[in-house]
Length: 189
Image (cartoon, rainbow, N blue to C red; front, top):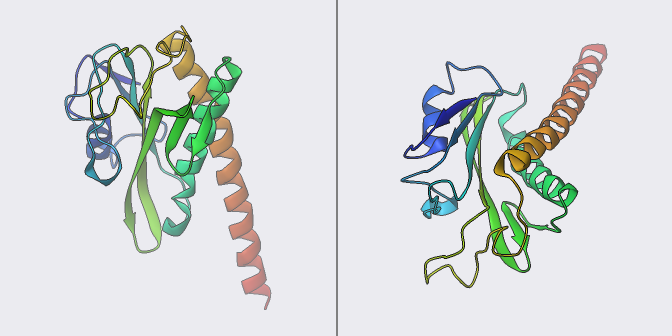
């Protein structure tokens, strides 16, 4: 776990170190000055108000199977929050919704070659303590505290990472078994 008080973007830093760091490295910061969402949108990341983290993964899967990692992250966040007593839903593929407002977003970025994944960076942002949102997003964004859920950021991170690890390993093991089965069929024919 690499912890920062402030950083431009946990995803950008994780991408920089992706080739040299070990799988499972987590980059987390109290604040992001240039947090980002999908399609180049800015993700607001106030200091100590939320969870701003990125996970570096190095799965042995084909690149076309990598987008499923975003779905694993969404399921992990929803499962973790639900287990902590917060009834959330997934707005596929990368938003977590609480009371019809976005509480969390996921940004997955890949480094690939034609036939292999070098690394995947899964960025996760969760609005925990934020009470005021800018006018442009106040109708669509919320936080756990704003919705009456006072839960420790450490407890949320711990639960999300536990859920993510379980689902990720299940997926990777399933893919490895399917790939091995396919190789055997090809070699026997």
